[in-house]
Image 1 (cartoon, rainbow, N blue to C red):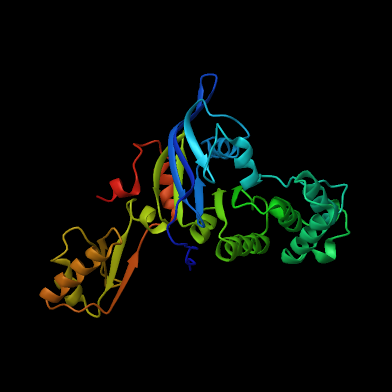
Image 2 (tube, one colour):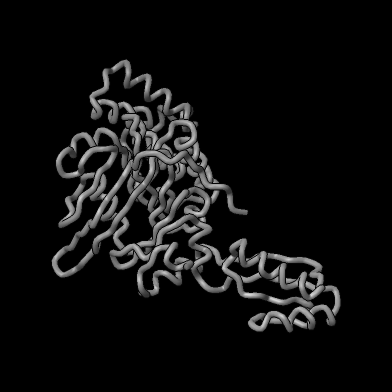
Length: 327
């Protein structure tokens, strides 16, 4: 069952970008992407390997410069005030950026020093983060002895030492077991709900985006091919239907005469009516049944999942927004 994504009231964008482009030689990595991400939300960027996800994160976190386009992060122009952008953000990459020779506590204290926090404040912050991420017992242990899930938690804790308002998570749960992955999800939700942090998430785990994201964009060959909520994206690919089950063959036959495009299953006494999953379509089906004086024993709405969306939209078709594709 899909959890309800974390949602915050609309506010000024935490991140906005217009026409971002990046090439390496003849290879176009980003081909003019536009983004608007409100504060206090989770935004997920999906795409196959090589689509440009990590390049997008690197540009918005000031690690590399775009060839063209402009962007604002935390209200600061990316090109003119990169130092202010860096002060407002945290970045967690695909692989845990921790020092294996140091303890968990020493890693956090090192990050506090790099953030120029006073020594007492750094120790206080480190202790607080160790408690928050359930790492207190591992505080004095070398990182090399920690599990993968604990290392990823420590990596995110290090990102939070500077109290960032925007966090870039580039495939943060890669390689984690299901339990550790869900622990990371809970931490991410708490950051958004409790502290109003904005999360920019790249992931190849579609369930992760479905669970966490307020809005999802699909990137393919350097272009945004769709953007919308999880439910909006699921409605733009074929395969959605309303499944009607009837008590008798006669009722099935009667209903089938009113739905020309429906697929019938005489053995199961069911009728599959194509649907975009919208309320208006459901209402229209019920109206037809009422007018025909036919009663369905049960009704189930089926919509494609994000796997279907991903596979359909990364087939190198024509880019479109969710709004355009559902017209």
